[in-house]
Image (cartoon, rainbow, N blue to C red; front, side, top):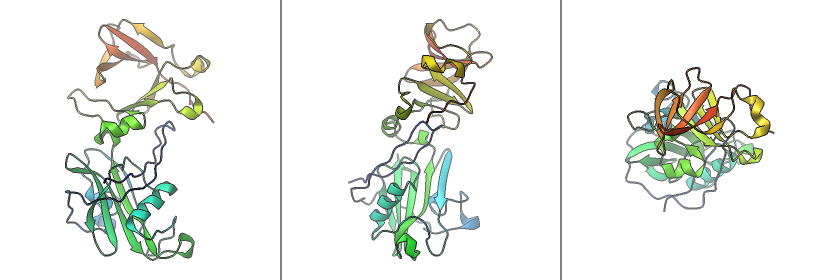
Length: 271
């Protein structure tokens, strides 16, 4: 039975979620022959430890590594699965880790992976070692972890957190570092708005009326595609994406009709 794992996600402060580990991970058909502890020059991704050497990413996202000889962070657990559960509660792990399975076991380390079509997209290594009294003393803890870009994970996951993945002109999922869209956060009462980020530029679908001053131009729901609109090549759910010549508007829809999403020109935050 695939275990439920953890997410700590911040996409322009719009998305966040967490879960609880309740099921024991089974062993996966994916195997790994490399070492479960590396550091320094042996790290494929600096600061991600051995977990960063396990993942097979088209686009690297991030990772973490606790290199201390005596673990000083968080809390230890009495089992490998317990270490994942503890790390999840503490918000240590980042990434879409639902479906973690055991890929390799050693006496004092266990490797968990999440594979998509045979390629490992997330990895977590837990270690049974010494820890400070404040961490609970010796026990199991997350030593290293790594995650690919969210665009490389199943749509069932990204849909569940409200993250919308776009495809490029070749039909391949585009990295979220290039483009992503997502529902507005519920704690701001902005669920009716959709945020579209292209690099460092953000456009918004249907901004609430009281936020008009934050945008370059008004939102329009059903208009003809302007003749000078620039095709970005990005698509999602049957809709294409164009930009206005001055990049103040994003046009989302089909050649027969689009919505114009205005560009955000001031920081838009809520408490």
